[in-house]
Length: 351
Image (cartoon, rainbow, N blue to C red; front, side, top):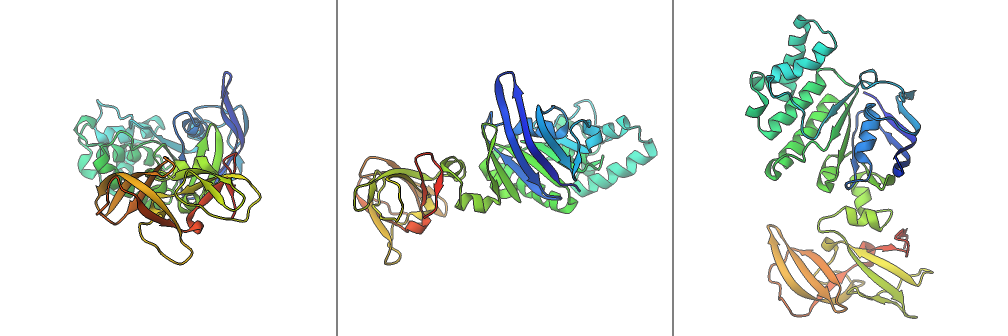
């Protein structure tokens, strides 16, 4: 096991700054997820950690040892690609044996290693199959097994679930998390999928335009985002954002609620998540407002309401009620404590 630290890491391709003074620390044996949209710099970060790409400036430390100039093999990392990169003409056994042969392991040593790893990953029955005979989940396990036989210090995973069918992603996420805990290895996982980040990560880093916007435990980032970008990036449906101005007595705007808070700013954005808006009044200090439902979607245990505020702004609400009057004004309620306020630059304001 090993901890990983990036200090002021920068990388450009021509005039495009992909990473900008990235500081990051990943603890020994944790499952860390780097979350970002396409072009955010997450795959570049992974390639730099792997030694497949060189940084322009900064330091990469494994257990406080500088590894900037070390090769991928010298770093002791294993990279699991998005498409698994299994050799189609080789059986599972031969795919797993290949990296050991490249390291000049003797044949009698290779067999026991593959057997042990196959048992850990529950793929012993697949050793004689070819990649075309595997399901997506099985191929992912084989790809992990091929990496694991080298006993790497760090696993680097580049969106390994993106090619899987949606109906098996949840199961594979669970398998990955259990596997990482059993192995006790440091996992660095990059994805654009917030569900993967929230469910897998011990800690999550949100990358945007080469800059780390926020780092922390998933639930802490969800409840206490640093800015409006982070707030909208996590959450499905995403957070509702409304513009408000001070009218001399209270803040009013295109949201359903008027409110008064002690803050020395005349214009703010209020964010409130769909699950924090209720159709029933709860408590004496609850804010009340009105909306006009346009559509309701039953999503199993709850209903999604797509509506408009009286000012014409879109709003989404999650409720456990099913009898929703479409096209008619209805009351909605929320607590100010459940709202997140942002200044004109989109930074979070403490209230």
